[in-house]
Image 1 (cartoon, rainbow, N blue to C red):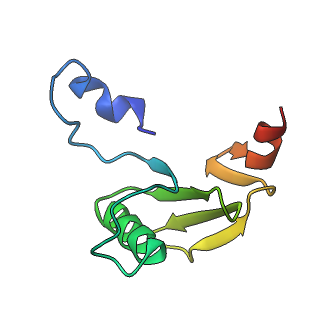
Image 2: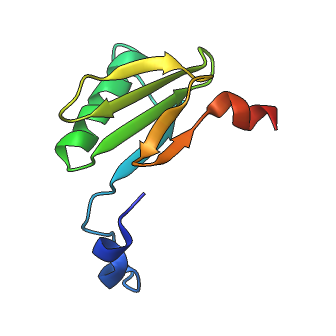
Length: 102
């Protein structure tokens, strides 16, 4: 999720946007983990790389364990159940369990 004002000048260009997103949401994946010790190491490294690149918040949704991990550069990383509300951006909350029940 990008801030519109920051990306607007780049939207008509056929190139990568040079502005980091404000929030990145990831769903567990079948990534090639051969160079990692496992999914946990991959997730932690990718999350830290995104935060180092200027992303303010990274949200991971893990389908097998039904957990959400929320990471922000200046805060403790949080892991919670996906039936609990969490804030995507200021004033915008989400509950994965409620969405899946619809």
